Length: 242
Image 1: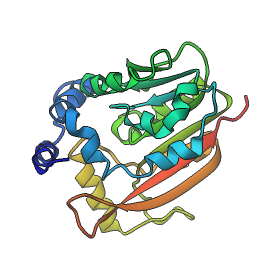
Image 2 (image 1 turned 30 degrees about the horizontal axis):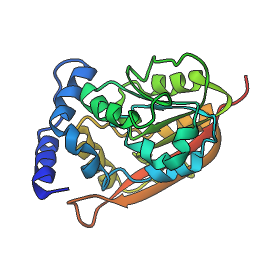
Image 3 (image 1 turned 60 degrees about the vertical axis):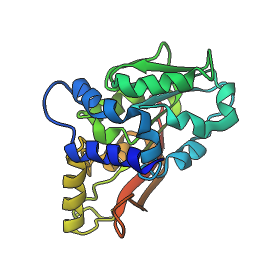
Image 4 (image 1 turned 45 degrees about the horizontal axis):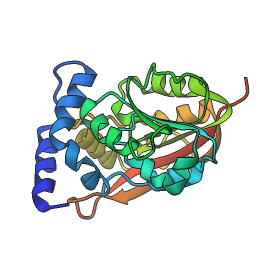
């Protein structure tokens, strides 16, 4: 990615996401100027996505939905396996990002589809085997409704995956990596400016609503912020039988 493209993206980030209009309108206004460069810049920021796809490992014939899938970049992490799926849908609310996703989906006609819809209420035609979120829950105002909807579209025994930035609890929650109060405050404020809302409730809710198979809290470097490491988590859970 060129320094000029980086500068344009950083300028948009500095301007922030704004507060006017609906959630969909704010997404479009924020991402439209940077959609063409979105993936190149986020490669250095959105860690753990390839690892999540590798661990989900859908087999041939699987049906898969990514909620809040943006540009569809994660499709490429499936590699040659993607062509063997029965169907994979990338669902997002932002037309500018979906334009990029549709270009990607065209590589797998009849298998991959990009759909403009809200992650809190979209339902595919029938129950699916895998649903995942990749840095989407922190951008969905009613993230609990999105997770409930994801579980609603999963068949019993299907897998739910999520990777996202993480706001650690304050230390009163045994077993959680709490981090320092200054670090928690910094990351929450830093991300909130761009419409990303870190919430310590993600992992407890995921653990409550599924049979957990993988739950990891990690830290990763951030482009143009040397010495800082942002917290994120990777989670995979199985939908419990009714």
